[in-house]
Image (tube, rainbow over all chains, first blue to last red; front, side, top):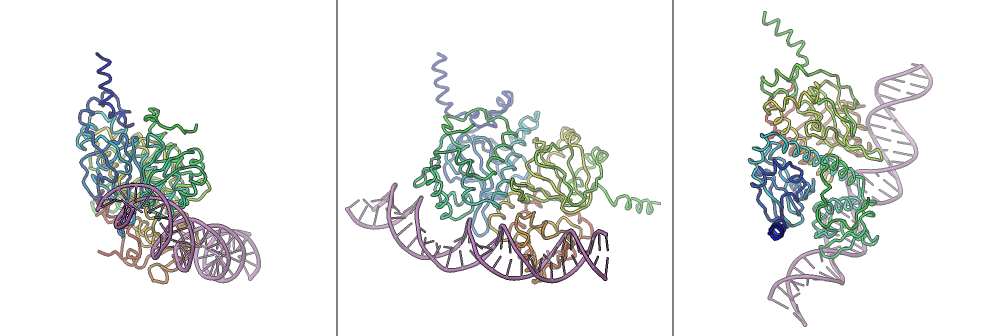
Length: 259
Length: 259
DNA sequence: TTAACTCTGTGCGCCAGCGAACATAAAATT
DNA sequence: AATTTTATGTTCGCTGGCGCACAGAGTTAA
């Protein structure tokens, strides 16, 4: 009964490594070697994957969660450096060689991820480099995102940055629905909560988003993109260039996508 | 006459690849394969190594110049993402796999660098990976610098940022003397020229620096470090951790170094 | 139902940094 | 020596974002 088997497969395949774009982009050869070593883990909101200086043991490949890399200053204030979802991985420091970073990795939107022992990944690098080259390209995309975050922090208004941030998050979610308080967004952007309240209020009045108590729904994505600064588009374009694998429509995504 | 030979060596070795810390850190084995392919090039102030999107052919290993990686926005405003001197290289995108970046590389302080054809570098990667691993570690240090730039742009005053910037530049120079107009510093920091004038004035009055028409001399480095935000120290500490090779005192450097 | 708590809204005074306009002063050019 | 160019200094009004304080309003717990 292949039909039933298939169904069963579908059931267990509610989670599958290929839901992560990087894992999906690998050749079946590499996949077959690697996938047996992947471990599905639940990523609950607020979970800390690593703290600054922690020696990382695993790299994480999100399937449907979002993780923020953020830096926490001495006085406790914080700023998000970059954001990672099903298109990427957490833990580049493991193969970059540093083993740890100065930032903290925090689950920003709950879901799941596959994790892989750092050593296994390095072992695979030795084989013939396909995995390594993919990881490096992803790293460059991440670098681009960090660079643009720096630019955005310097030059753009909270309103623009909120738009950028919403778009980045949206791209990593299945639908237009974001579970996130203004307080948390403020932490990510490194601004006051009140600033986010005002910016969000303006977006609401313009009919771009709908929100209440920790739930944000984007109702007009084209407008959101228009209101955002160039930073979102720069990062997106460069990421697409570096990792031309995004065809794979994540799930039932984007009822309101342009182009 | 080894004495004379040594002298002569010194003369031609006014420029030598090992003046770059990364090249210096390689095993003699790798050095012997690589150095013959290095080409000494002059890096004049304002020279552009690459523009956003340019396909890079060479990687550059500075010996005594400083290069800024900066992003130029649609409206022409700019922001420095990171800064590279004799401790690093320009062109990580070449081996990361992207071949190009969204940023521009601009010579900020004139001097020299050795350049290497990208393909040669990749060829060496295949041999046994020592070069690759070093490059990756450096890349992570660069990532740290970018991340911290983002944080700094968000949270710190122009005064603090100027201190950070001066320290970063100073670390890459032979002496305490910086050739740089306030206008250019403003471009790097992504702020107004007037803002830099005021901040520099305050530093001058505090006896930390001495400047006039494009020349800045740091007279009290400890004070400068004290006035800087944490960002400088974070980057420095992490870079030292990732690349423990800096022993090699560049030249006649740091008459006013603490610790 | 009441009470405690969490999330959002709003108003205040404050200040860093902006943009613009202009002043001085030190090179560089003639 | 006179003139132009380049670098720095200063002022002024404006505004975005900050810190603070507090007021609803929705949610959860008792």
